[in-house]
Image (tube, rainbow, N blue to C red):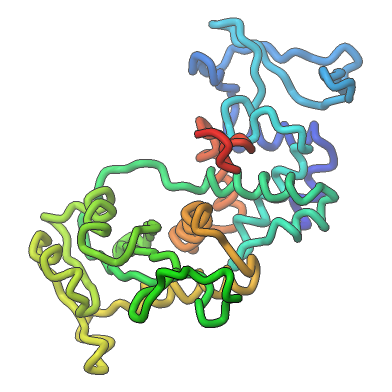
Length: 319
C-alpha cells in the first residue's frame, strides 16, 4: 500500500498509472476500439483544466484519430463520470484487492475523507468490476455445497422476524457455491432455497457436466443432478464421514467460513439485495489467491471496462 501511495502523488500520476495498467504502451479508444495513433489534448496551462463544475481537473484527455471522439482511461468503466479523485479510486481498488476480509465502506469514509454514501457507492462499483466475465463451462472436478447467510431469527427483534417462518425453515439467504479443483476457481450465487431446481441453472452456466466429476455431501438435492455428470461422489456428514479418499466438501466449507467471518467481522450485515455483489468479491479474491496484490488489482481494473453501476440503479430506483 505504501508503494502505491508514494507512486500516486497526484491525480495526474493516477491517470498515467491507470493508462499503464489498462492500455500498456498505446491508448485504446473506447468508442471505436482503434489502438494507438491518438492525440493527447494537453491542458492550456500544462497541468489541469476547468470542469463544468468550476473545479480544476488533472484528467488526461485523448482524441481518437479514427472516430474523432474524446476519451480518457476511465471512459466506459465503473469509474466513468465519477467526481471522486482517481488517486482515491486506485488506492481503494488496491485495498479491496489485498484485504482478505474486505474493507467496510465506513472505513473508506474515515480513511479518505469522503461521505458515507460516496464510500458505499465506490466500493459497490469496485465489486461490480469483480464480477466474473461470462466464460465457457469448465470440465474437471467440481465441489458443490450450499450455506445460509444472515441473522438468526431467534436473536432478532420480534418486529423484524418473518411471521411466516416456521420450524425447519429460515429467513437467511441461501448461497450455492461451486469450486473447480483444478483451477481453484469458485463461482457463487444467491438462490431461492436449496433445491435441485434452483442449483441446476448455476451448474449449467459454469460446468461442462458431461465431462466433469461432482463432489458433494449426501443431500438429496444432488441425487438426480449427479446422474448427469460423468461421475458423482459424495460424503455422508450425518454418519460422521467428511473425507473419503479424494472426495470431500472441505474446500467449500473453508470458503464459506471465510465469507461468514468477513461479513460478520468487517461488514456486520449485508442485505440479500446486494449479497450477490459481495459474493463476487469473495469469489474473485479466492480464485486469484495465488496472485500478488498488485496483479490482483490489475485484473480488477481490466474487468472494469464496459461496466457501470449508477447510484439510482444501485438503490433500486430504476433498473
